[in-house]
Image 1 (cartoon, helix red, strand yellow):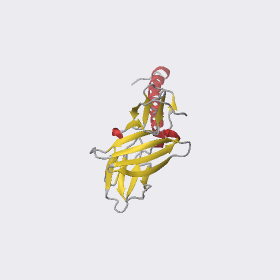
Image 2 (cartoon, helix red, strand yellow):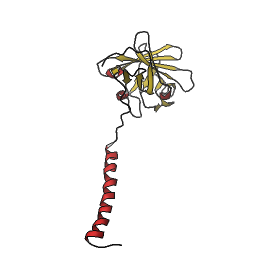
Image 3 (cartoon, rainbow, N blue to C red):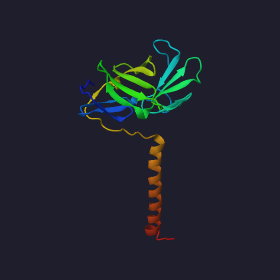
Image 4 (cartoon, rainbow, N blue to C red):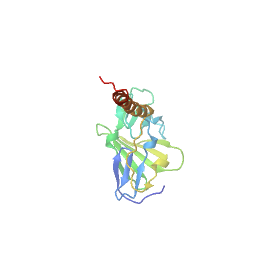
Length: 193
C-alpha cells in the first residue's frame, strides 16, 4: 500500500474512487455496515451539543434521518436530527494536507459532510471533528482502507450468501434429477407417460 500522486480520483461507487490515470484506487467498502451506521453517536472533539453517525457505502436511517450517509443528532433530544449527507452525493478530492476526502451533501443541499481519509495501519477509527463552520461538518477516518492501493481498481467484488449458494445448487440439482428420471424411465425401464 502506498500513496499515489495523482490529483483526480474518479468516483466508482460512494466508497471507491480510482485515480484518473488508473495508477491506484481507494476502496473503503470493508469499513461499512449493512443497514445501520458503522460509526454511531460519536461525540465531537469540541464536546458540542450534537452527536454524529456515519456509514460508508450503504445508506442508513435513524431518528429523523432517512437514507443517509451521515446524520447529526441532538445530545439532549434524539428526535432532533439532521441529514448531513447522502451516499449518492459522494465526491472525492484531495485536501491541502495531501489527504483524500469524501464529501457528501444533504438532500436539501444546505449541509456538507467532509470525511478525511487518513491512511493508517491501525484498526478503523473515526473521529468526529464536529461542525467546523455553519452547516459544514468534518469527520476523520483513520484506516488502512483509507490508503491508496497501487494498480487499477479490480472492479466490484460481489459476494453471495450461503442461502444463495444453496439455491444455486438445489434448483439445477432438482432439474437434473427430474430429467435423469425421465431418461431412466424412458430408455432403461422402457416406460413412458
